[in-house]
Picture: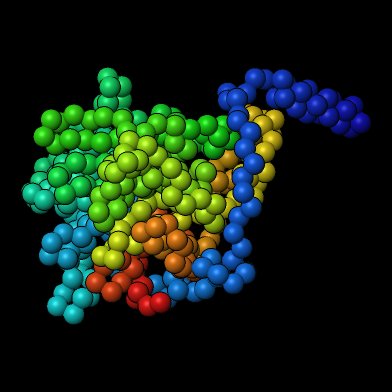
Length: 362
C-alpha cells in the first residue's frame, strides 16, 4: 500500500510539473482593474430590490439576449437556437402567447426594425441580417475589408439607415482564454445600406458588446465588457472620428445598451464583478496558467453571479440609478428596455430564462 501511495504521489507530482512546463496558449497583458463600486454605500449603485418583483412575460425564448418592439408595440426577441419570436399584447397591455417569426439558423443577438419595417439582426454565427415581414432572411454583411465578421453582437440604426454594430472578438466565440489574455480583439463597424459596404470605425475594444446611438446621433456608444466601460465614438462635431471613455469602472460586465425617449441609456449587467478575474488580470502568470485548463473546467469561473443588475445613464454619462435583484431570481441580465411604462429584461445562457418586466417606478 505504501508503494502504491508513493507511486501515485510521484505520478501526481510529475503531472503537475508537466502541466506547469507546457507553454500557455496566451500571453496575458497585465492590468490593475479599478476597485469595484460598493452596493452597500449610499449612492446610485446602492442595493435595492427594484428587479425582484419582475413579472414573467414569456419563456418561448429561453434566453432573450435582446428585446425590441415594432410600430404596433409587439415585442420581438431571439433565442440562442436561432429562432426569433413575436409577442403581441392585448388591449390592457397583457402579453399573449409568443409566435414564431423567423429562424436565422444561427444565433440572433441584436434586433431593431429599420424604417422599411424589416427586422435588422446581428447574428453571432451569420453576421448582419435583414428579415422581411414574412420572415425571409437575407445576409447583409458577413465580411469587412476581405476578412470575416467574427462575432456580430449588437446594433443600432441611424435615421439615415446606417447600421452601427459590434464585432465582439476575432476569437469568434466567448471563451475564458480571452478574459485571461486581457487583450482587445473587438471592433465597431458601420454598414451603409446605400452602398452595401461595411467599414471599421474603431478597433482594439475589450469584448465589444452593446451599441447605441445618442438621441442627436452625434456619437455612438459601444460597451467594452471585459474592461467594465462604455466607449464613445464621435460621429459629428470637432471630435468626429475620435473616441473617448463615456463611463468606466462599472459594477460588472456591461452587455447591451438601449436608449429611451428621454435620451437616457439603459445597460444590462450580465454579471457583477468577479474578484478572481480582477486578481488574475494583475497576475499574468496566474492568467497564463489558468488558460491551459480545458474550457469546460473554466466555465464556472466566469459564470454570472446570481444577482440581477441593470443601470440607467444620463445622455452625459452620469449614473442615474441601478436596478437590482439581490435574491437572484432574475440574473444574467443582458438587456434592459424602457417601453410603455415597463422595463423589459432579457438574459443569455448562464442566466435565468425568459422575458420579464417591471414597472418603471423610481
